[in-house]
Amino acid sequence: MSAVVVSGRTLREGSGPTVVLLHPLGAGADFWTAAAAELDGFGVYAVDLPGHGGCPVPEDPYDTADVATALATHLRGLGHESVHVVGLSLGGLIALELAVHDPGLVASLVVAAAVPTYPQDWREKWRARAAEVAGAGIAPFVEPTVQLWLTPEALAADGPAVSYVRRALAGTDPRGYALACLALATADVTPRLGEITAPTLLIDGQLDAPLFHDGSARMAEAITGSRRAVVAGARHASALEFAGPFARLVGDWVRVGHAEGSRS
Image (cartoon, rainbow, N blue to C red; front, side):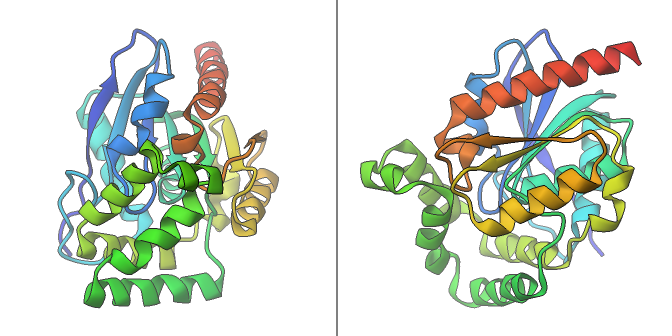
């Protein structure tokens, strides 16, 4: 099996703690540009997951645990011993895996619009999507993704968020996208959720699909001391369309996690 690697870049310098951001399927580090601009006082580092953004496409299939291992190696290689991790959708699953894989690295955790595992029908959908993308490319999934991620108001305005999603998906390598779909089809952090010790915030978009609200509820029950919050009016990509409210939730939570870490 070929090595799985991640890459990334600093979106914001800051004297405060470092926040690491993990993007959804078909996006990249630049998914977080607007939210990073709202995170005053923090160092902000955004990751490109395998086959996305500037990160190379792995030669072989991988799973989300492989990505967590690669991410821990990458962050420690940059000199980070404790970071605050934020992930949305695919990024949320990777964030959960990282909190289990390397708990000492994760000072606090924010998981948005994610599930710890997908139900069987969704696993089959991910496998089918991987096969279709391998044959026909990503184009058939662009508009359905835009409609899942963003509100009708955003679609009608056809503003920067809509343009970003279409551009990001069109620029994602089809094989990289397909391999990520296969990773989603097999991911299951459920048995280990109780091991997560980092202060954990679970963020829902108010208008997101029921699947993700159900996933958030399951995680809240399993992760000791976790909290839930809602971004009003948001669908799946709350951090993109509602960057300000999302960033305020993250900033407040990181300050709590940072304070708890300093007392430990």
